[in-house]
Image (tube, rainbow, N blue to C red; front, side, top):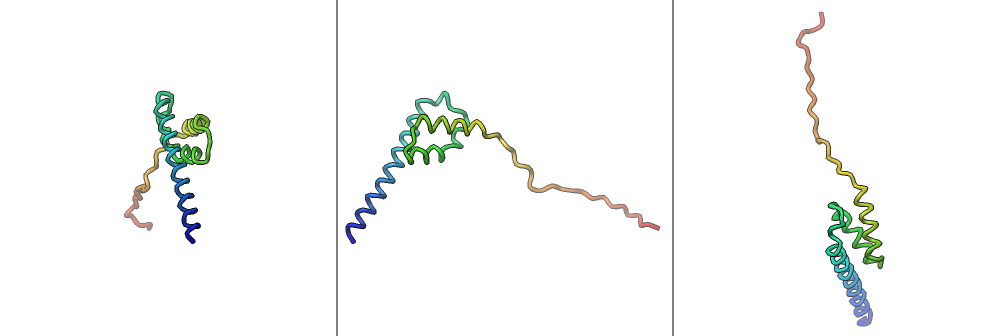
Length: 94
């Protein structure tokens, strides 16, 4: 049973190490290329992180993320409630 526990801990450390490396790579690339990034690149953070954890190239991942960020259009939400005023005539039909 001790072997299984050690194997599980190694796997968890490996996954945590991959994510930490991905975060570092993401930050370093962003910092070095900040001037060329669109303002809404932060909307693609989860996508970039997932791709880097999976082993994708940093430059290719950012190219895809920038393309996706450029497709995002600012949509403003409509009001949730609309007030409709109904005016009824007090006069009754004869």
